[in-house]
Length: 143
Image (cartoon, rainbow, N blue to C red; front, side):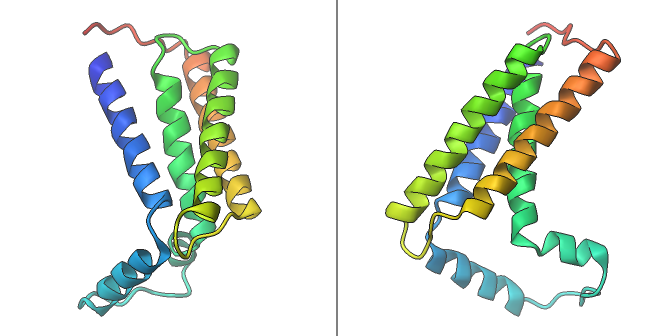
């Protein structure tokens, strides 16, 4: 089971990196292709539609997932583990923003993105710590 968690974390990290470092033109082209597909029309005024289509929420989602999964890696997470995850993922977030701003065509460094990434990390770490510590859940599984 522990191997599966490591694999899922690695897949989430790779997927996040690909999404964050995709050139803007590729993103626009893909989005246009998807919009041309016949679909059921969404209710554009609903809270769920607005939340899904708000770009900042995607930053929170990706980094919430990464932080939550990183907190599941150790058998018994601690505050020290949470701090390590906060520092490491915020460094990763900063480095991807810097790469976007310098090397990726059509992408730019954006402070609000860093803020949304940090928010996702803090929420992910906090929730996993609260759940696992509050309920005494530890990863008592073996490979």
